[in-house]
Amino acid sequence: MSTNLKTAKAIGKYLKLSTHKARRVLKQIQGKNYREARLILEFMPYKACNPILKILDSAVNNISQNNTDNINKKTIIIKHAIANKGPTMKRFQPRAQGRAFPIHKPTCHIYIVVER
Image (spheres, rainbow, N blue to C red):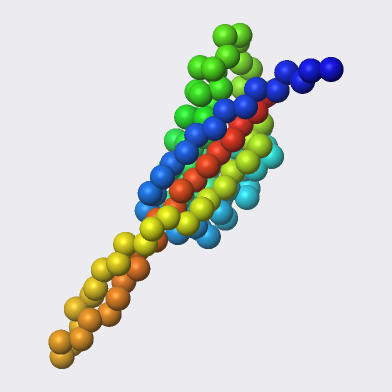
């Protein structure tokens, strides 16, 4: 008994987003099919939606590139959608009387795995 499930992944690294803001969006699309997830991402008002949409499109193109037969986009399901913490860029904001306040600019890595 062989299963005919095909998987593909796409990775976005060093994105200027915090991980908890990216995870808020990724939780909404995990387990959904491609078209439904694309609609959700297009109409959500968050900054994280645009890079996630690009990564999702890349994963779908990867699965169609790896398989020779036609891919029906209705059958593609998002298996995993994960946001991991990347390096933090550290900057300083000058303040009064020679002081400086630290500014932390977080980055994240997003992994999306799709299957059909």
